[in-house]
Image (tube, rainbow, N blue to C red; front, side, top):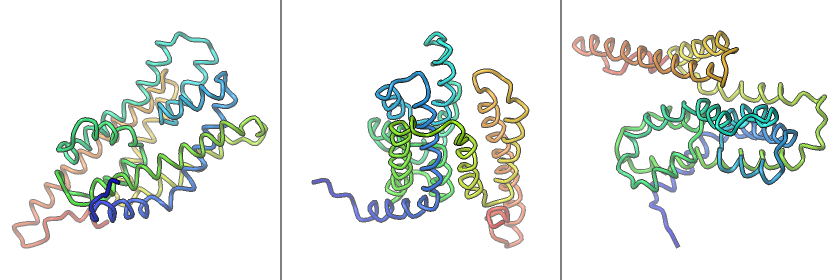
Length: 252
């Protein structure tokens, strides 16, 4: 039997505790996505298979009207790829943390990664490279997200036919995302980045292939880099005066 080191077991438990307050909202969002898929042109096995393989609610929802319109497969794949471009950015950010792992293990890390899991893990401010318990913490966060998402999605797919369209679950799913987003806003710089991404996403809402999501992510990435650079410069100026090197922003 595989026995994980104590540090990784403790890290996994810590990761679960980190994300546990958000699991009800994740369940709600997965349930809404599953119901939407059950009411599409996909069969139940197709919907479940797509959920397990793709594991990306926004991309799944973006593809449904394209399936219904009977568009070519390449168009659907292009749309899904564009919507999921943000995961390339996530992977690049995670690379310094797990580059020492073998390729198969890194592929597993990439598969279970998600928007919320990535944000919650990065908020822990681990040092790069090997850190005891870091991989366990990552899996505690992301696997909890993965399990709850898939359980709720499959429930939505199997029971979606029983849910009347008049219930307006799409709006309920949007409401479920709000507490997840608010929970991740812990600093003024994060608030600035979220606000900028939201504004860009709304202004570019009418672009095809959900390009507004990609532009929002890129805008947030640029704003985050600027905030980090400004914080580093401020810390460098304060250091000679005998003040802490950590920026004030990290405590705001």
